[in-house]
Length: 146
Image (cartoon, rainbow, N blue to C red; front, side, top):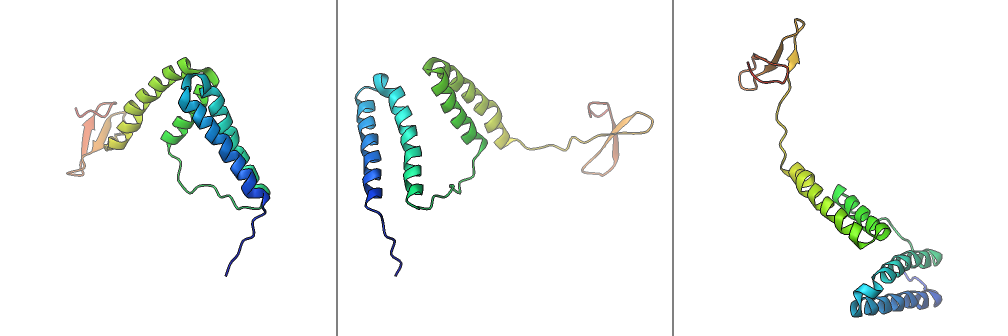
């Protein structure tokens, strides 16, 4: 049987952090406009405090196995930008992010690479290999068939 002993100080500290979060949530829900900045700041601080308390009591903390995607990085950056610049700048940045996501990231998921390889001969003319026949086909410097 594997028994882990928990110092009575650990649950007390964790409950204090939980109570602080609950108080911030109740303030935020009651008046988001008045408490949003304070709540976000306190909640970020509480996450760090939770990790510190756990490590202080030799509780193993591991990095999540979830692979970060470019979208995750952009979302985190947008959140930080909103905290730095305020809500009006964040709204503009969020619109920009949505355009980037629509134009680039979603497009990349549907993108199929075409075989656009063409080559230059010693005499300066261009050609590409026809994938169906395997023969050289003359083309211009942009790879367009002549």
